[in-house]
Image: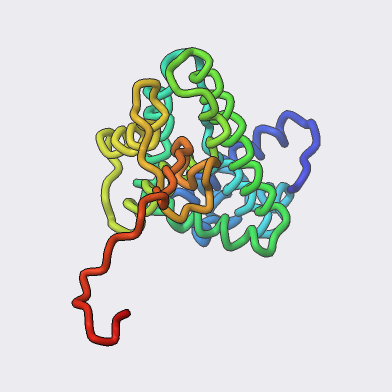
Length: 240
């Protein structure tokens, strides 16, 4: 991404331009972020914007980086309530009209642009680290079962993926009750007093993590020691 010198005026103009670019991105998606639009919104000259970002691609990439990185930070209070509050912040962003185009831009550009790929990786790496640490702390406090931290990825995918699908594909508004239900449902199998969910026949995860982040269970083997049942077929003359 473009570098800037340490001149305070350059730093201020860059910060103002980046804030303006982020607003335009959220309001209208990546195509709404132009040098002219940013200059007008920030109240600075167009040439100043070009000095910081020589082309629109780099300008959009920086706006994406500034806009879509979710911040999941936790303290020592109960993790379930904290997670609901943090996810609600992200859900509020999902409810903004341009959020789908912003996410699509990150995914699409990450396939061909190193900076966009770095943004995507950094987004999920940071979320994964913070969430894993929070789950580990919750397990040590006795809020969740030990080992839950190893399933941070599947649990976050279950929560965030479901919410994104409900918003983008089903058109639902992601109010507090919706978010709380998703968080509660994902964490329920990991609560200390939760009963183990039944095993699934034919699972490729026997004894290992469930793909949805639920505690692993095993299925009792079938009892093959019983004598086979006698046939009820009528006897015929050919039977010996």
